[in-house]
Image 1 (cartoon, helix red, strand yellow):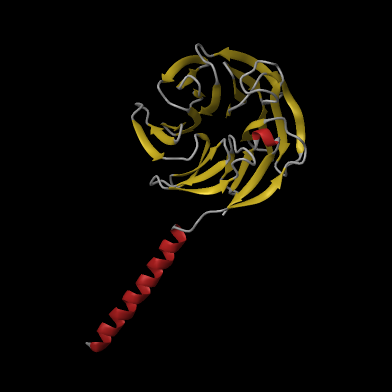
Image 2 (image 1 turned 90 degrees about the horizontal axis):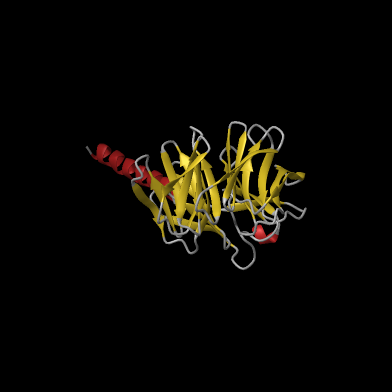
Length: 282
């Protein structure tokens, strides 16, 4: 009888230690480790998107004011070691920001238009004006090829179905970062992260960011990385809690990032610091 009690006691202690260890690991602070930073001057990079099947990145270049139709903007291609492959892959745009891809088409938010580019040769296929738009910002494309684009100044999210624009959401204060996952659309609305299902039912995933959100990327298990243009990167957990991974406010910007789960690598455009930085998520 005493032996059985002793064994139960030791088992309880062992189980407690295991649970504490697991809880400690799950609540451990995540961190970013810098891998590289571009040495070439990148003219006002706003958004980064991995090139499918290649060790390359698309980078949107504003190269001027963010709301000026000056024809100075474009899209560059970087190698994933931070070297420049082609700084002028696409030129003649205005102030391009968000990027999205579907099959062989790259969609680019360019102030009041969505520009469609052939990824095989970098040629502009068409320019789609979005009625009533003022400051188109981020782009997301779902698995059916529907393109979503936010208008930060007008507090709206539009969508393009077969390249025909229509209003999708209104009264979205600070509308910026978008991500389509299955039938859900995730939206950075100012200092909040929303999830909208296919019926547009809204769930607030997280609220209370220090600055308005810019870029959003899923990292798995319902967790996200969120950037704020002012210079903050958050790790947002599925339960809505979040923690700062980086705060460089006043030193550099952290704009619309990309994330690759296979290598746990973030690619962050620094906007007015004229560079792209790669970080490893730990």
